[in-house]
Image 1 (spheres, helix red, strand yellow):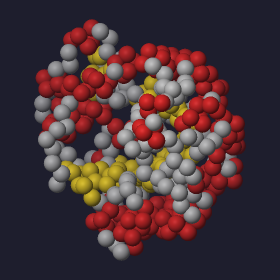
Image 2 (cartoon, helix red, strand yellow; image 1 turned 135 degrees about the vertical axis):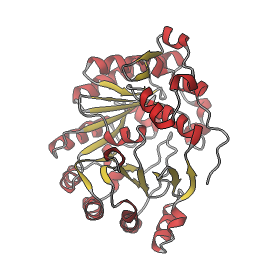
Image 3 (tube, helix red, strand yellow; image 1 turned 45 degrees about the horizontal axis):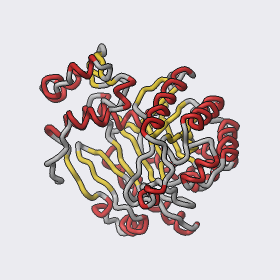
Image 4 (tube, one colour; image 1 turned 90 degrees about the vertical axis):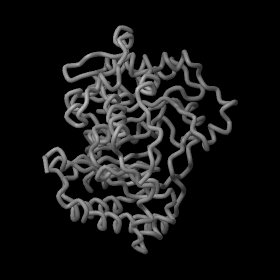
Length: 388
């Protein structure tokens, strides 16, 4: 097996939340101590079971996502990471990330996470305006966020991400600029910034007519402000929604965009293994029940093999998220056809400053990244594919 095909990523979904944010459509729910203990036990059993399928694989990254992983205890992190070390082959420089909400990131917990082996913390700040945080339904304050960041540094974390959102209720380019200035002053190694999307089924969706959302022009101004401020502060815009100081790009997410296999653990977690995508149903009760009964088929559902034109489209969609874009020679080696012949990137897009030629192939410019969805929707077709 070639070295680059041995890489594997692990994702652990921690579906606990104190309170659901008004914009969130991820699977999460409150849980008491007994439920959390039962859930961690199920994760441990699932991890041990799945290890047999990937004995020859090398785990390069582990990611605790949520929900709110910082609602786990320090012992939970020790138990889960010890289980992974005992059952999987880890890279010497494995990246182990954990998402944290500021209000639950106590100094003692952060110290335990670091001791357990977590190497990277991702804080869900979203904004440094208390007014904007309240409208989002966040339960932390700006003071909580800054305090948590300092506690992570004190615990020894030298790789910290801050998540931000723009285009949110009551936000203006001026208030977003102040948030950016505040985050830059903290000097995290990585910053993720996402434009708000109103997702069906969320409180925002039900009340969107009454939301004080910024208009399209203001949101576009925020997007430009984001790239200008962060590039000026030494952050490289390496992916549509992600910026990093040199050497601190998120390796776990890079693996997703480059097609590295991954196994997901927990309800609503997705996996990509052997060219097949599958997922677990979004119910922690159903997940625990299936694991206890060893009914593994019940937590690997909606299996879908990726192949043919769909595989090509997915390759293009994921690679074009990255600043490096599509490597056209790699595309030809993989699929036996020419990228430009198949997708016809329009000369108008190059002349208009949306696409650029790179030494490896084709990539978006900064301007192109802002309208990437519109461009890719003209290139790609995911219709007509059936599950296996």
